[in-house]
Length: 192
Ligand SMILES: [Zn+2]
Image (cartoon, rainbow, N blue to C red; front, side):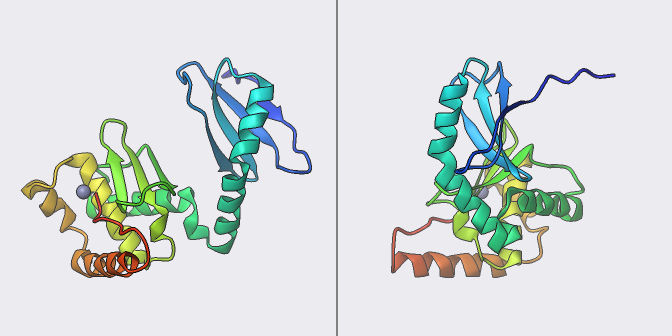
């Protein structure tokens, strides 16, 4: 039987839900937090004290609670939805040749719709796509999946991208969004 390391928890209090601290020796300084079901998981370096962990969660809580409210309003605003779409798009158009190791929404990406780190297989999708039609979100995810095969925008990439049937329609929609945003705030650039 596999031995499981004991799970470490910060119990819920009035201000927040349960927090599981998941420590990793490989994680040096960075700390990240995300929802898993009804509780928060804090990914932390092995040496982080419980007091500091609680402080970090406290600091990250407004963003996490906003995320939860968004997910309640629209389940498509969850990372799980992105993972589902990526799996289906890879199966349908790319013969399951690629799957991201991690795909998530980010709120700090204002100049690209999506971005990919081919070396780690990690994909980030801009929250500016919240509420966009499904074929537009699918296009951006498909574009990023293609980058896991071909990092550049060369001819090979264009052939892979063209396997998705709504490229032109989606690009037209995104151009419209850029135009709209340019009139009100900082423009978003084209997808990465
Ligand atoms: Zn690109």
